Length: 347
Ligand SMILES: [Mn+2]
Image (tube, rainbow, N blue to C red):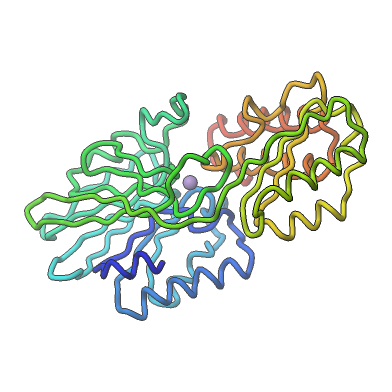
């Protein structure tokens, strides 16, 4: 936030997924409102849209983003496209706010406002042809039909990397890393500078983010429970884990070894680190969560939440590894089946 305010901006746009859930924790909401207040109290117009994570599944539910609207920002979080006009600097800016709830509407066509000096569309989702870690993402929720309006700029959210989809259509990228799949991302934000004749300069501004530490993996093939606990403590002591996002992989663990983990030690590590992810794979077991032993943090909604749910319980030892893999596979199958059926039911 300091980095944004230092730039003396005329308008702030958030392109979605302020929150990672429909019901964010109270301290998360309060921190968001504090930071929102810092923008609003400077009379800087602040607009945004809801992303997939924070869009209620039921239309009757109010999104947590409505809190921001009560303190002078404006987030479109419903199921309709909203157009707003705002004076920013010496320009009349028209914003087409296309929240995640509106992109699923097959009829949606978004067009710019000819009377405005600058036309910006703000939306959230996966664009056609987006390649992540060498794989093209299958599910496209922002088809060209939505993106093809003649806007001066299209501000995209969802993908956590700063990324050019096409000229004047960019993902701003996230301000933090959200999973070890993003260890190579550069957290930051985008500054747009409109020249008043249709041109725009786009600059990615990196910001300092929480450290992400991948500790050297432990081969537990010959280890007892006590050995494993010693090894975990030794690895954790090698790095400054306080406040960091930390991953420690344990491979070749004999069946049942995870049950002998030192719970107080793990609680202590989880208290110190923002996130201490202990990934244990048993000997001879294929990893249920894909080649990197983790789920991508950036994509999907219900499927992703379910995978996180299973993963977290497996890590805490609440679910047996084999059961967790089967549970995950079956659950994802049901979710995909439900998603493919026509009509929008409560989920
Ligand atoms: Mn998203």
